[in-house]
Every structure is written in C-alpha cells, then in structure tokens.
Image 1 (cartoon, rainbow, N blue to C red):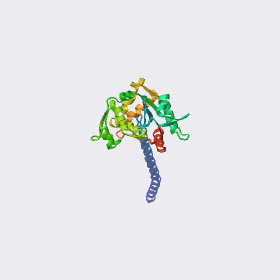
Image 2: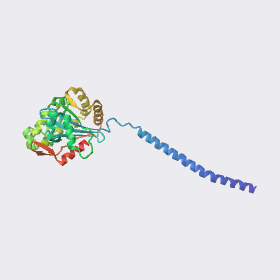
Image 3: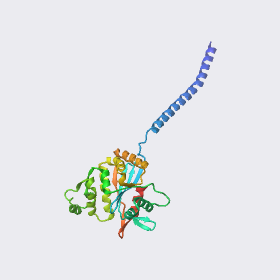
Length: 290
C-alpha cells in the first residue's frame, strides 16, 4: 500500500509541476490579450473623435477698403491657435514691382487688389520657400458697413492717443467712445488726425476693426454670408469652396471661449513720400503670412 501511495503522490507532484507553469503561461497570455483589446478600443475611440470643421485651418486675407486712397488690413484667422490677428498696412507701403517699386495704394488703383497681393507676397518671400495663399476681398466703405450691420463697440482712445490729443478731439474727460459701425470710418479718421506716421494711422484702423470683432465675435461667423449677399459689390479671388472653408474656420473660432483677437503693427520707415518695411516689419508680416 505504501508503495502504491508513494507512486500516486509522486505522479500527482509531477503532474502539478507540469500544469502549474502551463496555467501561469495561459493566464499571462489571457492578460496580455485583454490589455491589447483595451488599448485597441481606446485607440478606436480616440480615432473616432470627429475633428470640427475649420478647427485645423488657417486663412490669410488682405481686406481692402476701396476709396480714393485705398486702405488695407491684413487678417490671419488661425483655427489651431484660436486667434484672429489684424495688421493694417499703410497705402504708402512700398512693394517690389518689375520696374522697381510701387505702393500698395498705387498698385491697387492701377492694377487691382489681386496684383497688390501678388507684389506684397513677392516683397516678403524669402529664398525658395513659397508662402501659403493670400486671398483678397475689396469693398467700398459703405460695403464694409453693410457687412458689419448694426454692431457698435466701446473704444478706449487712450490706447492710441496721448492726453493732449484726446482733449483736442473731445475725449479728454471720457476717453472711451461709443462707435457704431455706420460711424466707424469717420471715427478712424478722427483718430488718425491725432497720429503722425503712416504706420500709426494704419494701426488705428486695425485697432478699431479688432475692437468690433473682440466685442462681438458673432461677426466672424456672419461675415462670409454677408460677403455672399453683397457679392456684386465686392472684388475677391475667394472661390465658393474657399469661402466655405473660411466660413467653417470663422464659425469654429466664434464658438471658442479661448479666442484671442488682437492687432499688430508692422514697423516702417519713411522714404520720401512712401514708407518701407524695416527688417522687423518684414518679419511681422512674414509671420502672419506663413
């Protein structure tokens, strides 16, 4: 009996020695498989997250006020960065031309805003790296008022003007002005009257335009539809597909609580009756157009 019992326990021990490692390996493989399934499921869920239309796009446009002396505002609507940046350019700004140089205003009046955009890009291009497309949209002052509609803003004149100038313009005691869209053009001219350089005068336009967008972000989403409605009164190279893309980005930006709207100034120096970009000014515009 003892020998049979010993054989039994001996056999059981050998069996367990074989089964235990196999069971351990099996459990380990099952655990690994479960982990892989969880990782694949998580990846699938991440991959299934829809990217909102317009959130990954960046649009650059030169907005032109068509008048006796055209005015220019360069705009960058950056979806990924959640920013809208405006940079007004003096009409006297020199740009490269086949025959030497011309100005943005002269080029626009003689050859149209499309040609002005081309020369501006050529002026800023460096090396063999091509800049992304720069679109343009031009309208009369009345047209821009119609685009904005009945919006109005509060604008702090102290951000641009010194106290003496503000006092002379009637903003000495109360520097904050109520500005309606219909009176924005006249208000910008008043601000510019108190400024010296073409760059400062241009900055006044960008500051006022930025105030409208900052205080009423819904204007961003509404602007493309307004452009469509007044298409007969505008000049643009935005095709229907381009305009739809701009609309997606502006609509997405409108809904972002972290949206930043600001303006910047491209540094210039006088050259006779014209102004030329400094190296810093060129870098500012190049960064906006990249």
